[in-house]
Length: 90
Image 1 (spheres, one colour):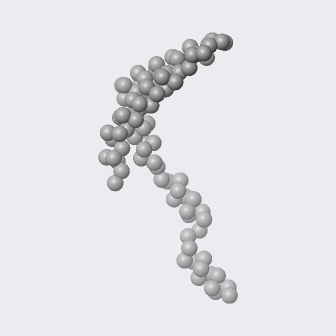
Image 2: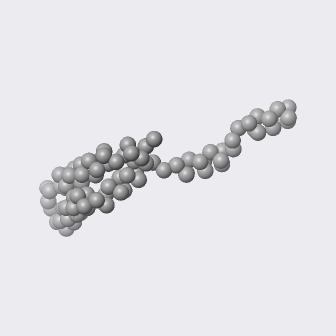
Image 3: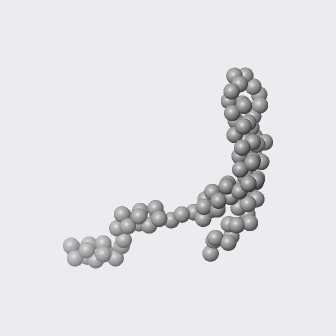
């Protein structure tokens, strides 16, 4: 019985090894998104979004939201990502 347990354990990777492999994996989409966020168009959209957030945050009573600025930033980033993501995926 002990011999059979050893054979089964030797054929399967340890849980620790599986966890280490998962940590090493990097999502290429996240990498491309980070690079695209540094582009000129995305930086401009982010600045507009942050200015809106600070303006809204400084007021105690306002109905203004920064939804349009957020969507503009996400659109600019996703437009950049759409052209680059498939080059990094194999």
